[in-house]
Length: 422
Image (cartoon, rainbow, N blue to C red):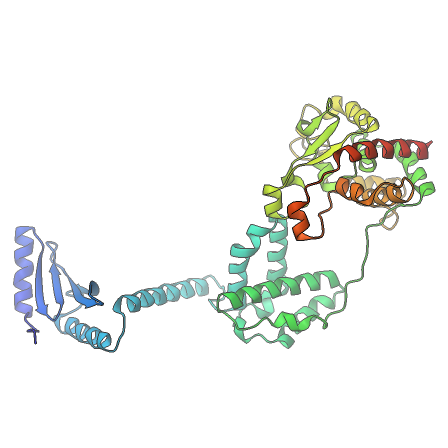
């Protein structure tokens, strides 16, 4: 058996003085793998050399004189005893380091007034950063976070996520439901469900209690955007737009809402550089379209054929706004596009309430009347509306854009609107 306990405090002190005097480090062995690395600074570092599966390892046991010779020997003996029982010292040290880091993190969170690891809020905030934000728009992510912070965290945030049961989550959702915000209630439930599923994947909880609440909440009434779909009513709307006495930029936005079939947000963000007057098209970049994040990045731009009437509106608008970036700039700043409330407010001034017609309703008007009055094929209309193919496999392989058919359709549609208005 190899010799142990070879050092003494006197020998260590002498070695330290010699190292300081010579300005050179040296190593002292106490046996059984315990070594003191003496530094010229007047201190030492205890290390334990060991072998596992034929490989040498080194374990730090602290600094001298903070860790005395007696304590260093105790740590050596404890470590060797643990190895004899099959403990991997390197893995144990990593776990101890992780535990200390976790304790510091918990202390930091407590100091900031935030719940610690394992709580619903902690897991939810991790899910927001790792899973939710990379997959949705910044606005969507911000809305989800705000809802959780205001409607869930005050009641469930500090609860261990693995202990939350369906009745407890339901009681929280009932508070939102009681305000009559049924759609918000379901969206919050869906967000919580995703948090629980993420918690299951990382081992923070064993199940998703939100899945048991599928039939527990009041259903959301189906409500479509108000839209005029009767040709006679559409004719009156078009005449009212033609006679609009407000800002000419707003009037142009109203006319192109009917002609281009774009979503209100896409129309507001139109830029002059996207318009090709010779090719008679507007090419809307993929990132502006209503799509998932990966589809915004990898998807094709949306090409909008321009009828002669649309070109005329844009050419009339050019002298007013072509010196800036946006076709429809904000009334307050040319650096921003038109407010999302501008077209809606203009419709109100024309006498159309939110139950009569909306900015989004122009798309429904076109979708209905193109099919019922002009007998256009539904797939061509859907392509112009930039609606996604319902089948995921279809989205991957169906790249048909029907550009030729859409070009003809858009001119037929514009001519039909002129006929109605007349």
